Image 1 (cartoon, rainbow, N blue to C red):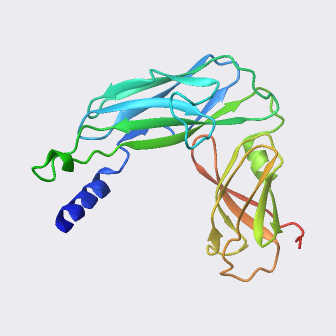
Image 2: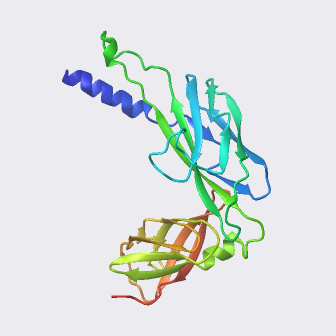
Image 3: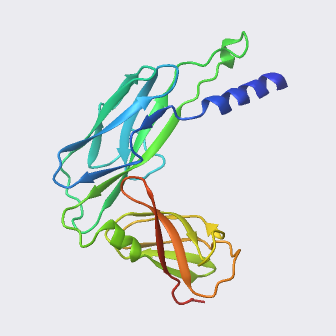
Length: 239
């Protein structure tokens, strides 16, 4: 039984990697567009069935409970090994804020065929289903600045032993890493996803360097999924 359990775990480790991938890491859905397309490909050596839906960030969402102003079509489809398909993301015409971006999540639920039997007993079959999520950002027309200018306006402050990251801009900002070291490659801590005009608290980055200034260095991800460099100033400390 112990050997069987080890084999099952090894199969899970080998299989549990998303084989259905998208051409981009995020989708920018511009206001006024009726739809946009996203190409997905099955990199598995076996066929899969893919179920797609868009939600508002609820981790418990399902295709039946998800709420979003954009829907993927088709919602269920089959992909052969190596096959590509264009997934349509269609607006349902809902009214969304015009002064800021709105964030939603595309779910790709990948269902492979049954894994081979681990033993003669059919009940020992292992099937691994995978759920991949990617950002869908609705962008209104006429926002007051560019994403690059927005990155330059990010604000940082120490509050209650944590780092408060404030986003005073209309853009959804994804910071992939933050460092309080002004002249070092060390001291990088976790990043942050900050919605427009909102603030999040993250753990303070490690201090593996001497800080002679209040400089904050960070990396952020642009609309094409590329990592960009940014910097700011650590503002006053609150007790």
